[in-house]
Image 1: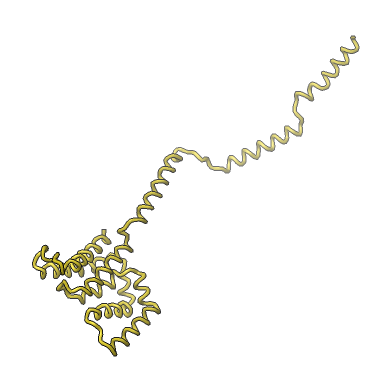
Image 2 (image 1 turned 90 degrees about the vertical axis):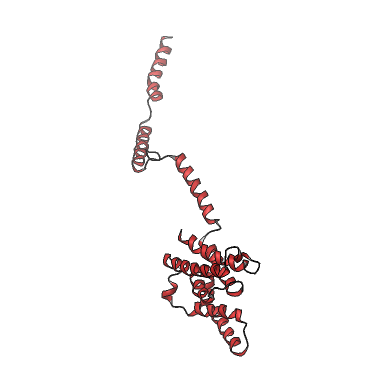
Amino acid sequence: MLLLSVSTSSLSNNYAPRLISPNSHQIRALCRVSTKLQQQLKHQQPLTGPCYNPLRASVMAKRGRRFGAVCYSSPLSPANLQWISAVSTAILMIVKGTAIHKSFLVPLFALQAPGSIVSWMKGEYGMWTAFLALLVRLFFHIPGELELPFITFLLVIVVPYQIMRLRGTQEGAILSLIIAAYLAFLHFSRAGSLAKSFNQDSIPATMATICIVLVPCLLLI
């Protein structure tokens, strides 16, 4: 019994340190891992700070997306306003219920027409259209209502680049507003009164006149 107890105690004394104390290789591995983690933490920037609020950032991002959607879907964008002005100018060139000087509509159209229309007129298809229209004008009779649109077409094609630079600028919008205000003054003054300008024959011309005045005002806002 004494020999058995001595052997048992010797075995426990031999294996106890091995069971409790970690291996030297494990200690060195843990030291290397901790050193690498410390180095990585030094190079990384903290995700939180006194000026960073994730909830506020997410709310601002949602507001920005919502505001951008409203802006892009707005019916009063500059492109839509240019189309309204171009259509109103074309109506005033054709209709007869107004006594304005229609020659002023030509520079107004050149300043306020959409960029896609101007690019098409100055392109190859516009040149061919103008050439064929000139041939028809030489050999056939063109109604008087189509003379002014034809002159407008030619003016947009041959207008110098320095004048076309006014398009889309504040100076161009101011010049368009001056022309439109003068035409509106002629239309309403020669109609006699505001009520007479909304007669059955003058309604399209009156609405078109109001539109060509409102478009430059909205572009200047």
